[in-house]
Image (cartoon, rainbow, N blue to C red; front, top):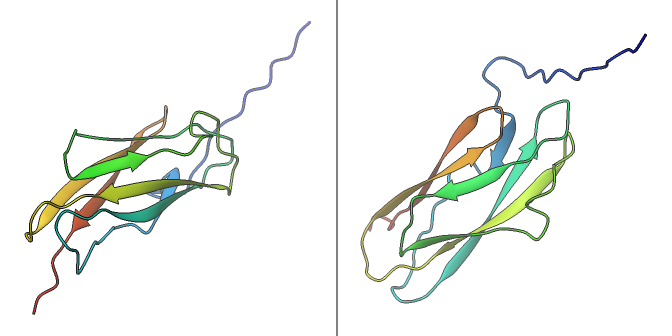
Amino acid sequence: KQWYQRRVAITAGDEPLFQPFPSELHFQRFVPCQSYEIPLSLRNNDKVARAVRVSQVESPYFEIITPPNASAKVAPGIDIRFIIKFMPTEQKDYYHEIVVATKKKKVPTGDSALIPLL
């Protein structure tokens, strides 16, 4: 007789499987034709190791720089760090959205660039 063990992923209520830090990205006081980078950390809130993917609609202004270990599963309670690169071409408000996805579900994350109000 064989016994099979199955792991069950449990998260509390609406808590995302991967918690983004920060939850919104703001690029302020930027100069056109220069590039800026902000780290985006994703913490695995689940009880099991999970793979995570960060994607976006193609944009000439935003780029996601993935870490070398991005294809590996992330252990519970551990962060994985992506870099969001912003390359403005003019002084205006930009808005962009990235998607954080696991095999279990997608977690929307807002990603925006704003000019400060004078």
